[in-house]
Length: 281
Ligand code: GUN
Image: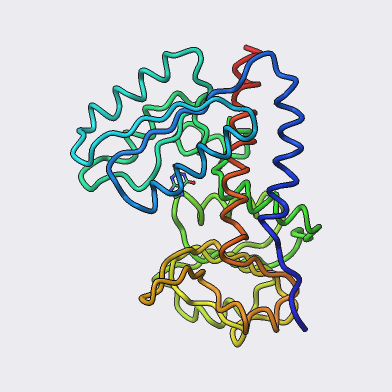
């Protein structure tokens, strides 16, 4: 069989149009503030994509770039300025931060009601204990939106999440658990990874290495590829060997054009949620 494509590009465009309709009727434009520290080329591309998408929806954006050698205090001062600026509704600190900066201290300095990435300890705590956070991490929300668009049943399914980062693996595993999937989280120390993947109805891979292929997948499984990296010959690749996997799976997300655009549109929905939360207080 050949798998149906989980088309993140198409789905995100549809969700963008729905969001534009909601935003047009708001009394003011929601404002997204993005902080980039240093000059990581991939981060610069991602940040530009987020700013561009936000503007296309009708949001206002504020962008600040600090040098690679910015101190933690300088970074946190900038966040505090935005925390205290009533016009700013959502604050995003692009990751990774330069070595030597304590990521958690930086993220936790964001006012939770402006935490558009859902990465503060406050919002994580709410989320992992089954209470509604102000925002869910964007990749996780994007994956859920993509699976919903294709009516993928999660209840009772065995979901295998490969990767345990705070950004993707952990929140995605938790979200799938809330959807009543039976969830296994795998990581670099997992033994018999391939035999575990073989039992998965749903595979979410978020490691940044080519580790999934058709031979280790169960027939008709659903494959969500979160990985994105450049191969030595400069090509953009995901974690999944697309050609062999799509012969076995029932649904598969491509790279590019799968989870990437869904992460960006989820960020935009998060911003709207924060704006609404701030305007009913
Ligand atoms: N770097 C890679 N993905 C993300 C993301 O979703 N949010 C932030 N802040 N940084 C990232």
